[in-house]
Structures are given as C-alpha cells and as structure tokens.
Length: 598
Ligand SMILES: Nc1ncnc2c1ncn2[C@@H]1O[C@H](COP(=O)(O)OP(=O)(O)OP(=O)(O)O)[C@@H](O)[C@H]1O
Image (cartoon, rainbow, N blue to C red; front, side, top):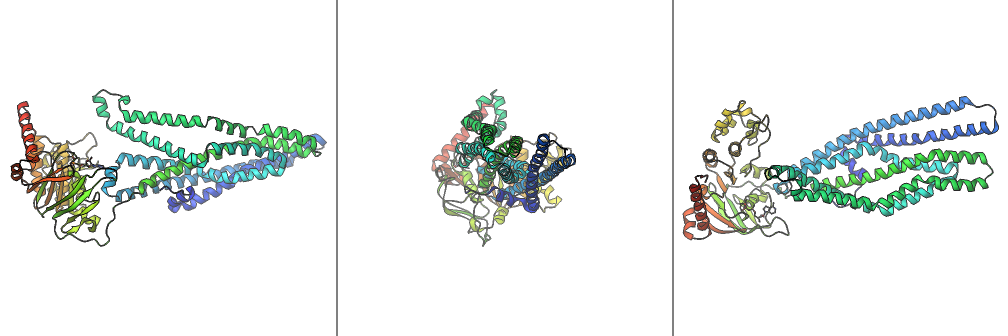
C-alpha cells in the first residue's frame, strides 16, 4: 500500500464499537482546549480593572475581581476534567484499536499460504505487528486528544491575538509564520515521510538482526565471539546510529531557527509596541493589550511546539500503519470456487517449472512424473537440487509458474484449501511442537479424536517409552518445568500426530535427520505404521533408508536426471551410482572410526 491515506480515517477503520469513544474524546478535548484559553480573557478583564484603579484611583471592585478569579478557577478545573475524560476515552479507544489491529493482522497472516510463512520468519512478523501497533496505540492514547486541540487552539489564539490589538497580533504572527516556513522548507511533509520510512527501515533491520543474533547466541558463545563478530547485527547498529546522527545534524540549524523564532516573539512585539505607543492616544487600551500579549506569549509558544510534536508523531504513526498494511498486502494464492475432490490419491507433475522470485533462477525446470496411489517414492539428490521445492508445490505452498500438479487427476488449484490440507500430512525436517501437553500436540492431527484414538496413535508411533518416563505422562507440557524432548522423541510425537490425521498422502522431509540409532529404529517402526497403504513421498539423504521404495527420483539442479528402482539406478552407472558409492564409502569410513550412525 503506497497510496497516501488519512490517518484519522485509517484509525477509524479499526475502532470497531469504540467509534463513539473516539469521537467523544475529540469533542471533549477540543472543548477543553477552548476553555484553556478563556482564563486569559478574564486575566485581561482583571488587568483592566487594576489599571483603572491605579490610574484613576477610587474603590477597587473586589467582588468583580473575585468573580473573575473564581471564573478562572472554575474554567480551568472544567477544562482539566474534560481533558482527563478525553484521555480516558482515547486510552480505551487506543487499546481496542491495537487489539483489533493485532487480531485482524493475525487472522490475515494465518490465512496466507505457507510460501508467505517460509519467507517471513515468525520473529520478523511478530516484531512488525508488535512495534507498529504499539506506536499506533501510543499515538491514539496520548496524542489523539491533543490533535483535536491543535486544530481548535490555533483558531482561538488567532481570534484572541487579533481582537485585543490587531497590530500587536500581527507582530506576534510574523515570527510564528517565519518559524513555520523555515520548518516546512527544511522538513516538509514529503521529507518527514521519507525520513520516517528510512528511520523505520533502519530500526527494523536492527531489530531483525538482533533477533537473529539472539537465536545464534549459542554459536557466538561456543566460538567465544562477541557482538562485533556478528557482522549483520553490528552493521545494522552502526547504520542506525549513523542514520539518526546524520539526520539529526541536518536539522540542527533549521530547528534552532524555528525555536528561536517562536520563542523570540518579544523581539518583534516590543519594537512594535514602542512604535504604536508613540502613535496611540488610548494609552490604557494599549498598555492593557501589551501586558496581555506578554502574559499570553508562553501559551502560544507551548501550543506551537506541541503541534510540531504531534505532527511528527502523526507521521510516525502513519508509517507504522503503512508497514502493517504493506505486510498484509500479500498476493495470496487464489483458490478456485468450484472445488473438485480428487478421484484417488495418485500425484502427477506435468511439465512443471518454478522459481521462488522473478530475479532468481529456476528451482524446478520442466519436471514431469507420475506417482500411483499407494506408491512410495523417494526424492534424492544434492543439496539445493529442488527436492523440498517439489514437496512445497504439492501442498500448494507455492504455485508453479508453468505446468500443473494433479492429485487424482484434479489440478491442486481446483481442490479446496481445507480438502488439500486434509489429504496431505507433512512431516517436516524440524517438527515444531507447541508448548502444550503431549496429548494436545497429538490431538492437533484430528481435533475431534477420542482419547482412545490419541493413545493408540502414540502407541503406534512408538511413544510409550517417552510417556512412561514422564511423571505426568501424556499430560506433560513440553518446554515447561525443564521438560524437553530429544529431536528423535519430538519426531515420534509428530509421527503420532500424522498417524492420527491418517491422511492418504504423506510427505516426509528428511524425517530421520536428527536421530540416534535407537531412536531411528523406533522411528522406522512408527513409519511402517504411518505409511501403510499411503501415497508417500520421502525426501532423503541417507540412501540406505530408501533402498526398498517403489521408485527413486534423482533431482539435480531443478531437473529429474535419473529415475527407477534402486537396483535399476545402480545399473545405469550414472550419478545415483556415484552417490551410492560415496554413501557406502562414508559408512566404511565411519566404521573405521568406530562409529556408525547410517
Ligand atoms: N524460500 C526460498 N526462497 C528462495 N529460494 C529458495 C527458497 N527455498 C529454496 N530455494 C532455492 O531453490 C533451490 C532448490 O531448493 P530446495 O530446498 O528445493 O533443495 P533441496 O534439494 O531440498 O535441498 P536440501 O537437500 O539442502 O534441503 C535452491 O537453489 C534454493 O536455494
């Protein structure tokens, strides 16, 4: 979203049922702003009485003065009460706007396909949502009431300064206008917007690399490094510092001039007063006005500085909202309305080409292959060859640029999102378990599963030994009270979840990558259960695990360069044979070293 938008209009979109609070906060604050100016009028009347008394003598009308005094107290108290109410209302609005922004962002993010999530880490998304909604909340809570005052008070000031003595009023206006002109020239709306954009970029970069740094702290510690060695983080801190410093120094002269101008109203008003004094005949009116302007000056200066402060924050908030909306402006995959159910669970790739982004090379080039329902196939090949990409396309984490992917003869684009997710189970390289009980973690596979079904899945996935050693059994919360599971144990829980889901298509991505021999044996047993009668796509590096599959596809540089059964591929004496030899050599090498994990 690069179009300009109205900040108030945008905030209003998120107020929900708190729209009334939002409007009332504005009204109360505006009235309070007008009331804040009124004591100056009474001060003028008091001064008028005093000048008459000192000049002409006679009796001082003390009851009138007392009335004026009490009026000042009353109006000031009323103004405070109104402002306080406005702040209460603006705070309630702010909390709710933030809540609505977070909820709608999460709802939208959740609906995006996995491609979005693979390219945007959860840490990055969290930072964007948290920081920008916090900026918006602060603005609404603390500055929104002042924003309405910044419209009303200048008008009130203008009326006041021009109505007592317009000549002195103009003398006041000259430095104000010069000050704002200087400020506008040096820091116009466009420049402020650009500054805020660059500032937030620098801040975001520093935050993101900070998260990366914290995540990699174990490496930093093991290698006895410091923050200086973590180049990205260090660079982003220096970048941020340089940017802010350079920009601040840019405004050293214009901002000092602005400040001097609006604080230097006396410099204009005193010479004007001297000239008018020599011309005027009504000395009382003149002296009265002059004293009034002297008393009123600080109110003008404070208000003007406040307006500048609000304008700056409004620009920051606008940029914050723009960032959230840009993130949510993701071009998600389109799902067909017709939604056809596949006839069976065979998978075919027909001349599929794909690249992750326009400027990158093709990750897959004209790939075609067929997997029959119930077949177990394996994708092997060098790192970066395109194995995971094939799996990502079946689940529609992305759509191919060319060609089509079909399940049971139906293009995956024509299968509804829910059905596609229901018919495929994905066992990832790193299986994420939620910070919940083992029972709940497995239940995510099928939300309406009975306890019996869940326990059965755990048993089939060879998880009994894990549950037995934990005091609270299946109710043990993983990640709490120092209870953590090993990679292999987490994998078995994830397999139990997949078993419970009982999807007809299973994709295993490097499923045995992190396991020790004992765990691997158990995992193999649980796999046998999981894979029974299913269409299976295995992505594997350890060739020993896929020797018996129905068909092996060797994917290299985005192409299938060899395919067939293990024996057939060996006979071809091509790349697969070389990989197999390297694999068996590595086993022998490990044997010599006395360790064999293959
Ligand atoms: N999210 C992504 N964005 C951009 N490029 C990507 C992304 N994921 C993979 N690639 C690129 O696509 C190509 C294929 O990667 P892919 O992960 O499919 O290979 P792989 O065979 O599964 O590798 P490995 O065995 O190391 O997991 C590589 O060049 C990789 O750099």
